[in-house]
Length: 281
Image (cartoon, rainbow, N blue to C red):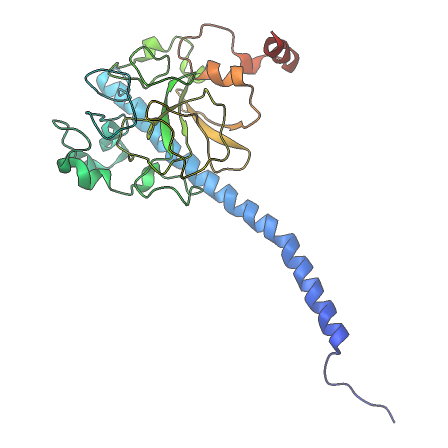
């Protein structure tokens, strides 16, 4: 007489579980990649809004917003001084007139009168891939210099101390000059309205892909650009174009695009052999 089974054997159950585990393991990277693609798209849209506001500001005042304000330089990353920054001057143009109206520019950005605004977690300056940064930090930074140095009036970027830069000052062309990029925050970040390394960076250290969040560099250090995106960082150019620069980008190329008046042929358009030769030289 035949016998009918009404359940799986232990071996069959283990095989099914193993197959499901393999399928989940294969699907997980694809899901994570889709999530990161979505985050990058949101990040680009927020940079686009910043870029449009920067150009609208120039159309209104005939110059770009100053990177930061102080009686004298260089700027140190300490909560002392005026330090009203370029982002604060774009708020009305980024459709945030209420936030802009609560900023008192007659006193320091660290004054108690500005404390409620400085503490805001404003989504317009947050990259969705940066999940562990301070709530009131900005992931987007203006470029003040092609090399690592303290923030000062003589810097060759677009957002510098006290000096309003116009399109006429960007002699390399807007399409060849980087305006804004991303950063990895440190624990001592002074907030999204602070005109220190909190919202100003350079490219002297290349593109940073990881950092110690609890690191406390000296106040005079500014730091380089970087992001939580795998493989690179978004860079907003003066023309409004957003490029995803690989972490493998030649350092000379980075320094050139962060310099508004280099005057040399664009290195990024030159053959790879020519770049290698320049690196050797």
